Image (cartoon, rainbow, N blue to C red):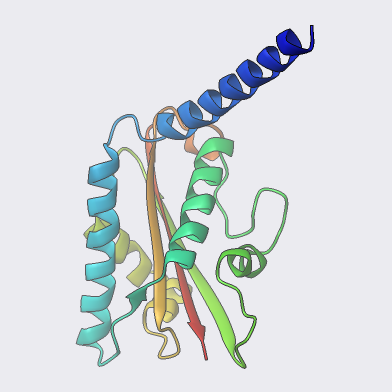
Length: 178
């Protein structure tokens, strides 16, 4: 009897894990993960090219900031909202701090740019939208940033503010720790 119960528990966990994996992979159904990775790279190149044209240092990619950006892009796409705060109301810098901790540093600061478009969005399109928005432009031109995390997700039939359409959502998280 205990063996049967344990087997059911393991099968239930496996089913739950498969459901979570399918839900996350469903977000990228119309664009491959490879093309989204290429878009992430193109955004990084575009941001650094823009910064260089304005005499600023290039930003280095941060794995922690990438994870923060990915979590936020996926959450917005899955839950159908668009904003810097998390779905539970947590302010953006607290979410980012979870992935890009401040501990051991005397100075820590983060910023964030978001953009979405339907049905598609290019790095050039994202840059054009950010440059046209004073707060987003300020992040692009900030001398303090040293690192960046980028995540583009593609959501088919995106709920909520996306109106059930196909949406590409890009989150860029900026950071500095010294």
